[in-house]
Length: 267
Image (tube, rainbow, N blue to C red; front, side, top):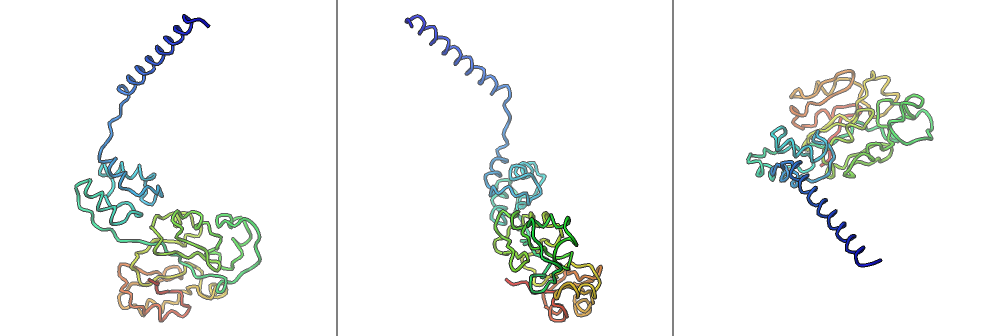
């Protein structure tokens, strides 16, 4: 290879490099997208879990919505009050502290209380139980199946199966709502962190049926309603429900419930 060939190759490479540089520079100017500085600042303040608990497609979606004024500054359930205050400063608005929420499993039908119909061997996924006989081995077809689909879905390791039933770690829970959405029995809801009592059952069958299925199921007797001095308890479709906005946590419903289906929430 002679010197001329080397020089020609070098010139070609240099020319290509210059062309690509000019092309990229032009493209950068031509397709430049304005960046919202507030959106970037809000995104940096968010925890980055991308859990979707805020109702948006990850932290990027929430940051864009907050920057546009389409979502409140305290919309992130994971960041809580500290993140809300930081974003409030960025947006120049006050960050009203939102009520802390926590997931609660409305079922006590563990291996000791719930009756079983048969021994099950197969895929351990609650969503698959609709394809097996009677909706699963537990006699109560409306209770927790205990196969941990919610456990696998939780990004914060805040829910675990203990003795055949899902149990929430209140301190680890960030109220992202993923367990709520994934539970095929709709047994998990978000309740206020400072709630004192809750109904640990969602069985809508009549009392005699429930008693055959579980020792801790609500039988819809209405004793709790009669003993609530503030009208916070009602029975609908044979199952008690508590209005947490009205409840004062006196515990009368807990004490009077004959099946102990209403429980005190341990702090």
